[in-house]
Amino acid sequence: MSDRFELPSELNIYSALESRDALLTWATEQISKGKGYMEISARDVVEVDGSGLQLLAALSNMEQTWHLVEASEPFAEACRTMGFGGWLDKRYLKSSNGESST
Image (cartoon, rainbow, N blue to C red; front, top):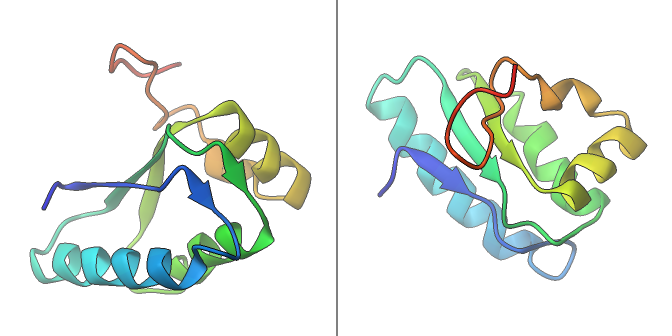
């Protein structure tokens, strides 16, 4: 399993259960490896709703911190709209060529 979690293209109520299970399995693995923080990519997300963002908000309550390292425009817009703009921290976001976008 990769060290980075790739969110699905549809991060919504219809995929919430499957996404939650995959995310929790991955997060548990990362915690057991003793990673300093977890990297999550939303580069492929084309559809997102409150349920999808709620999954990530719940992840924030775990003992391990996480950073969003890539974000599609639909995902970024949903974050801004729902008040999660802080997840779009430019210190962690990478451009399409893998470099920090700062």
